[in-house]
Image 1: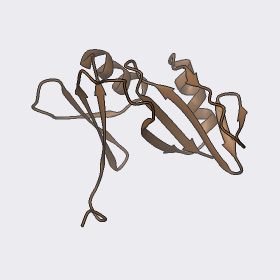
Image 2: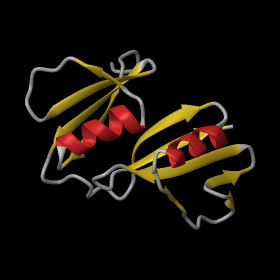
Image 3: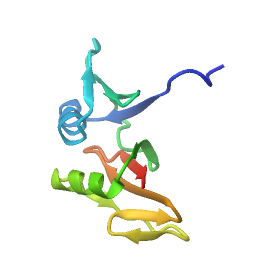
Image 4: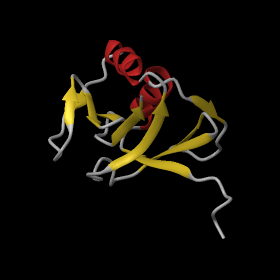
Length: 124
């Protein structure tokens, strides 16, 4: 039923203005027109990211959205240059090279938006 439909990452925030600055200027997402107050919509590759105002912002303790990237080390460095701080986790059988966690060929890095939502990068 939904296997051929697009999914949208949906992220709750407390401060829409801070989120707008972060998602547009820091992450470089392309804003899309939206008519509802307190809601932001972004194009990200072939996907969409919906950001909306909610009292429950930042309460999710798991990853809210993940981007697949080429050259993850370069993306991490570019985001760090814009002030993004990366999270470090101790997972079993996972080694860390700086801010990038790896298991075999899989590599990932996590960071948070201004409301504490956990976002991830995965790639080579």
